[in-house]
Length: 323
Image (cartoon, rainbow, N blue to C red):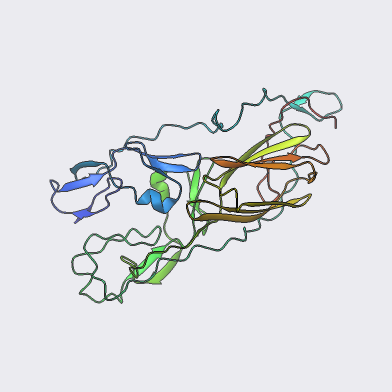
C-alpha cells in the first residue's frame, strides 16, 4: 500500500486510478489567517485549517505536484495601519555618523506565557466504531486506521505526536513543545512528534468540546519613534466588552483577550524598556490590538518583549535621539 501525498488526502492506496479529494494549491498563512491558495475558506486556528474540506477531485499520487507558495511580504497591510515615514538610521557615536545597528542588551531568559495548555484529544471510546482511513486526532501523528483496526488488538499501537501548539513566526515553523524550526510547510508537517503515548486517537470520545480554546501565542510586530513604540498583536474578533488591557507597571502589560468565536489569549507581557503607563494607550481593532507605548527613557528597543531574542536592526521613525 502506498500513501497519497496530495495535500488534504493522506490516505493509503493500491490502485492509482482510485478517486482522491485534495488541495492542489499550497497553504497560505497571512496576518493570522490560514487557508489554501486553491480555495476561499480562511480560518484562525491550525486545527480548523487541517479541517478545511479539500476542493479538487482527481487520482491518488505518490508524487507531490503542489506548486510552491508565493513569497509573502512581512509589511503591514494599508487597512491595518498607516505607513510610517521613511525609517532613518539611528546615530549613536560621538561623530554623528549614522549607524544601522546597536549592540542589543542581553535578553532575559524566556518566561512561558501563563495560559492553560490545550488538552490532548481524548482516547478512543471502545463503543465507537473506527472507520478505515481515519487520521489520528493528535497533532503531528498522521497515522491512519485500517479496515481491521476496530476488531484487532490495539495494545501495540504507539502514538508519536506534539502536545504543544503550532508556531509560525517570521517564516519559521515549528511546535511550542520542541525546539526544531523549519522554513517550508512540508518540512513542518514532517517534524517528528516529541511525546509518545499508547494507542492512537482516531475518533476520541465522540463528545464535542464546547469550551474556550486557550491560545498560547499570537503574532506581533512593532515600530518606534524616539519617544514611542507602536505595537500590534494580531488576534481577530476580540470582544471589546470583556477584554482587559492592564498597564500593570512600567515594564509589564497584563492582557486578557477573549474573542467572540470562543478563543482566549492571556499573558503577562514583560516589556523591553520602561514606559509611562499614564500616557500609554490601547486600541482594539477588527484584526488586532494596537498598543501605543510612551517610552520613559527614549532609548531604542530591539525587541518588544524582554523575553524575546533582541534583533540587530532597529527601525526608528523621525529624528534620532542623542546618545
